[in-house]
Image (tube, rainbow, N blue to C red; front, side):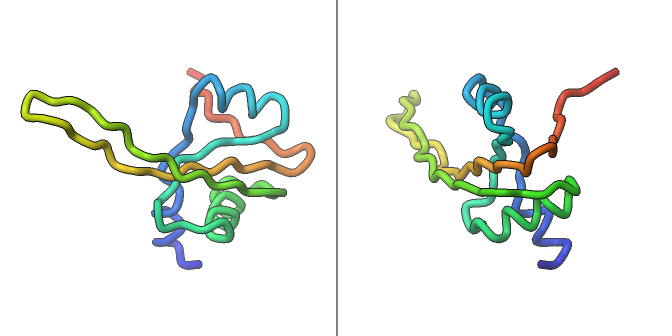
Amino acid sequence: MNQERLFKVLLGPHITEKSAMASGDAAQVVFKVSTSANKLEIRKAVEQLFEVQVDDVRVVNMKGKSRRTKTGMGQRSDWKKAYVRLAEGQDIDFSVAE
């Protein structure tokens, strides 16, 4: 996988209460990923960018919500998230320390 594709696969961490619980219990990290990315690309991108070993990748397609606007009904874009389980003893820390 070339470096350009590497940076386009992972869009950023998806930090919510649910993802925080997953990170504590099963050493998982949740990422917002490109809708065209597959599991193998996500695995390689995480391993190369964060220098960790990945055990498992699960992918979920999230449907965009319908929203009412003043001109009628609108639709948010669909997106994809990936649950990445890291190997034993591996960790990725997204907290900002100042």
